[in-house]
Length: 269
Image (cartoon, rainbow, N blue to C red; front, side):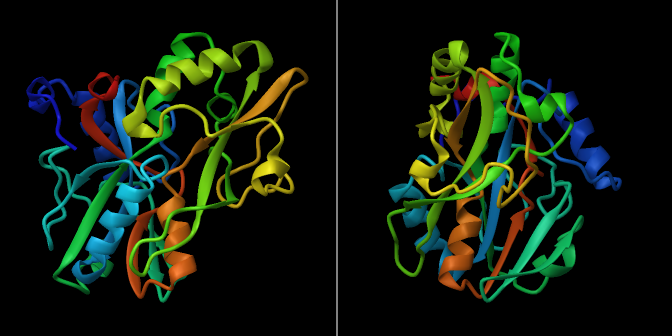
C-alpha cells in the first residue's frame, strides 16, 4: 500500500479531478475509459469492528482484494486523491444492511453519517490496465459498446477470515485467441490491480452457467474467434458481505469506481 514518493505529487491529476467533479455534479455512469491513465479503485466501507476481519480477508485473498489504501476510522478521505470525498466522488454507491442490498444512491453522505467509526478500503480495479491494453491494440468490448463490464460470481471459494467468507467474483473480457497471451502479459504487469487473468476459456469450469446472464454489469458480444478471459474482480468483497450477513456496509456499485489521482504507471511492476 506504499506509493513511491514521486507519485504523491498530484499536481498533474487534472483529468481525474474533473471526472470526480462531474460525478459529484450528478452524472451516473460506469467509469471504464474515464480519465485514462489514472488508477481506478473499488471501495468497501465497514464499521471499525469489522475492519480487521476485512483487512485479514484481503491479505488472504490478494488477487481479488488488492488493497491500495485504508482510511482512518470516521474519515472519508484518502491519500490516493487529496481533497476528494469518498462519500460523494463515486458515481453510484450501494448501501448494505444485514447482508442485503438496501439502496443504490449517487450520494452516500446520509448513510456514512449513521456511524462515526467507518473505515474505507480502496481496492485495485482492472479498469486500470485497460488503457495499456487498448494502446496495444486489444479491443475492450464494454468500452466499444459503451456498456458496463460483465461480472460473475464463481464457484471459487475465497479463504475465510474471521466472520467473512464468500466466493470470488470475476470480470470478463472477450479477447481474440491470438491476443490472449498479450492480454495476460499486459495485465500481469499490474499485480496491485488484480494482475493476470485467473481463468481463460470454459466458463463452466468456474461455475458460470451462462455468459449472457452476468451477476453484475452487462452482457457483451463475443465474436467468432474470441475467447472469454476472466480476471479477479473487486466486487468480491460485496459477495462476502452477502455471504457473511455483514450488518452494515457501503460499497461502490459494480463498474462505478473511484478515480484516483495516481497514474497507472505507479502500479506497473
